[in-house]
Length: 437
Ligand SMILES: *[C@@H]1O[C@H](CO)[C@@H](O)[C@H](O)[C@H]1NC(C)=O
Ligand SMILES: *[C@@H]1O[C@H](CO)[C@@H](O)[C@H](O)[C@H]1NC(C)=O
Ligand SMILES: *[C@@H]1O[C@H](CO)[C@@H](O)[C@H](O)[C@H]1NC(C)=O
Ligand SMILES: *[C@@H]1O[C@H](CO)[C@@H](O)[C@H](O)[C@H]1NC(C)=O
Ligand SMILES: *[C@@H]1O[C@H](CO)[C@@H](O)[C@H](O)[C@H]1NC(C)=O
Image (cartoon, rainbow, N blue to C red; front, side, top):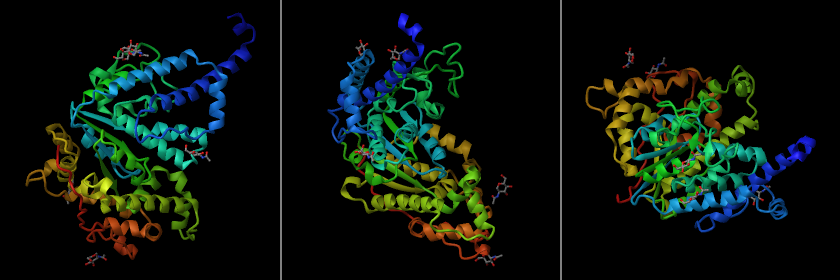
């Protein structure tokens, strides 16, 4: 104790080093404890194996290390008692495709649903810190492993990506906790702690910091689990999840007209699209520009995933559904019913009433399954904000994607802004349903 006060700087440095080591050790111990999990080859992510080895062998197992091990042992116990016949759905999308809205279709399901909103946010953030976000292999693997564990109600790997690292499974830093009803229900709410954590609460009730052990226990009680993510690049990367017999997983891929996505991004991230605005004013669009390349790569990833899904290879048969945001906006109730049918999860009155409240479905006269003229106007609003020149760029780099999903090309500014021309072709995407169990 004396040293601590006489050499404060050394102590501080030591603390920093210990903290850093603990983080690394914790991730190593994750790997060790999870060795029995099939389809999860255990390799260090993102940092050099040599560095890892040194760090582990140089430091004796700390108290934290032993605690972490015990924690993980307890998580393994939880794994064995999940409900039989449980449904696991992954809602895959990209940003600005309305995935938060569609996620609500499941979040609002009721007491038997465990819904998680963008848990991979933490993984992306941590990998960006550690590797500059450049190691795509590491990200792919981390995303897959975290998703697999979360479907099994095991938060330990996700925990290791939360910054600051949770203590005793308690965290105040879970990204958008309030967007998951299941993390705010009474059994997961936790006592409010006066002072430090007071600002940390849910929308529906005041809760204390999130206790992930409680979250895990609640998850195990639920009949169904849905996770929404905009971070998975390729459906193919998730093949091990589809082949994990414990999960019986189904994928719903949500897509949207890339021109609408870009229009929305240009509003949301105006500064980043300064160049685009200049191009629209008359400048030439350099096709090798970074943002153009990113747009192309996004379009290609979405299309490749959908192509795999629609081709229905044996590992994916009956497990894939493609949904266009435009169809959901126009026929919310009908599309929600279809998604639920595909999922094998009961379409509850709570969901129906949420949809009625949050769309204009309530104004329909012919029951809940008819069209929404107004929503269809809403869904094509981007046509009046996106300059024709930019629409052309999107059509050039995302052509095959537009074609696959049935989004009509525009050949003139007049056509772009002509309300009587719809750019959404009627298109039915065939998918097979597994026999419901
Ligand atoms: C990227 O991650 C993979 C998997 O974790 C690892 O094997 C590889 O060495 C990493 N590459 C770089 C350049 O760090
Ligand atoms: C693990 O579970 C056991 C038995 O329920 C409990 O006594 C122990 O405190 C738990 N360990 C941790 C670190 O939570
Ligand atoms: C977190 O929840 C678990 C399970 O209910 C409980 O045993 C544990 O004491 C809680 N942790 C804290 C710090 O309250
Ligand atoms: C759309 O809704 C607005 C008000 O909510 C209404 O004034 C308008 O007539 C509607 N348009 C159509 C085509 O139904
Ligand atoms: C809009 O499209 C319709 C249908 O193709 C066409 O009849 C009409 O002339 C167009 N309006 C304008 C202003 O171009």
